[in-house]
Image 1 (tube, helix red, strand yellow):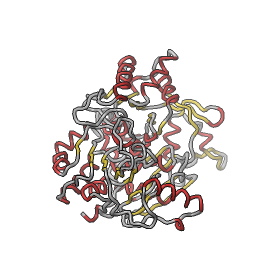
Image 2 (cartoon, one colour; image 1 turned 90 degrees about the horizontal axis):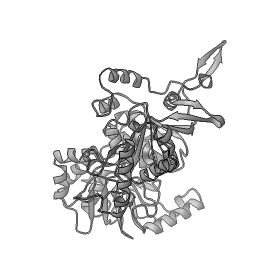
Image 3 (cartoon, helix red, strand yellow; image 1 turned 120 degrees about the vertical axis):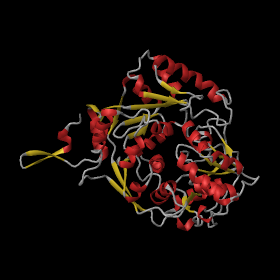
Image 4 (cartoon, helix red, strand yellow; image 1 turned 90 degrees about the vertical axis):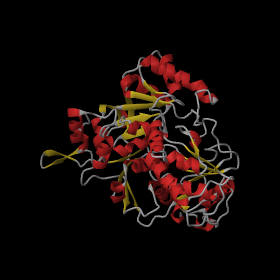
Length: 484
């Protein structure tokens, strides 16, 4: 347990606990030992492994002849390297053919649960962990992937780690960390029609930038947060790392409990009752303090779309691309010019109406059932087809999402309008699986990063919500979904 003297003050001759944040509370409950230099040894409740980094981590364990500490607490999936093509196998692309057998062998040898390419539970790691109940409120969740913060939507402390740290967790079920500074982000108001969680995150990035919470743990609060579904909360927490933060989370509430209830790895019976009681304590105390506070009113937000080469290069869809004189300083103005040169746009032009070549609806940011429902509703309302000049993909985040969408007939809506209906995986989000955006091609994407070459060499990426992606696919140009 955490040393309570570090979280208390002497008042009238007695130790009085200081108000704690939610982050303090979960962190303190997981401290195995306090170490020199301000570091803590923390217990890891859930460890997630994927096909891109997992084989190398298991190899590191094997090279050192180290046994696994707690195989039952690690879960692996095939997502980064697998093809999303209908009828795919592990041999559809070279990276999966090379890495999947290694991951399969390691999981079989250690007893780790693997959701293989043919599993009914296969999917993107940050989609399947919440939907299977692997991620629980108040838990610590680690994965060798920067978007592990997605899991914080359930009130978990979740963050990404490097391969050497993955080896450490496999061997010890612990991690050595210094408690990060903390940032409170208030999302006030209620979302207007046609505006979604992805728009909130992009607007936050546009206002504060990609260094706003560098190295911080972020707690999201406010009326907008409480009104969001769990899947919307996952989208917001997913993009926390784009603010530079390590961790993003939200306090669990009835929405959280209703989401977790009945999932495969969730507690049952008396354990469930005990869990609910514990989760009800997971909130920041009145009077708790933060190292930084950010605020965003969502009442007046319009749909957002990125124009440059970082998620902070974002504007409202009905706005014009910024000009040099809008920049804070010469360095920012120069960076804008480089970004516009790369994406092939001109300052001062409207972003709406920009022709596109590709649309990608998927990724751990926006591939859940509600995302696909929003996109399908736009497609159905528009009553149009994707023009021949555009290639549009819909890639469900998991087999569970795919089945649920097909039961609702969403796949027929997409296919009928000229979209490709694919198999679950990371797909065109990061181009590690032969699924690239071509050089010079412009893609409207629901993923989380628009870095130079992120979706393929010399590819051009615009980030937006599933609604904006669907509307744009049908129009062949970047389109405001509120016009459909």
